[in-house]
Amino acid sequence: MKVGDLRVFNSDIGWFYNGRLFIVTHIDNNSSAVTINIIDTGFTDHWDRINLLHDSKSVAVKKCP
Image (cartoon, rainbow, N blue to C red; front, side, top):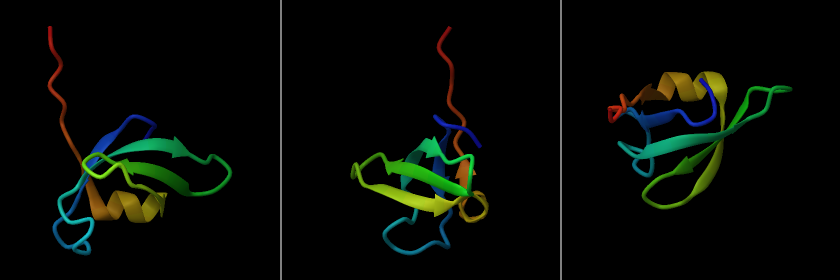
């Protein structure tokens, strides 16, 4: 996981996060903290990196030629 990764929360997460698209905006190298920004609401939240990897999945982004 790195800054700029686009992910979506899995369907089994709470109602607020369910299916929401987010981008990783900061990773604290001294801890396991990850800062994310929810795309549709602009809400910023902090997650544990391991939990985030478990509760979300990568979103493939098509690259334009």
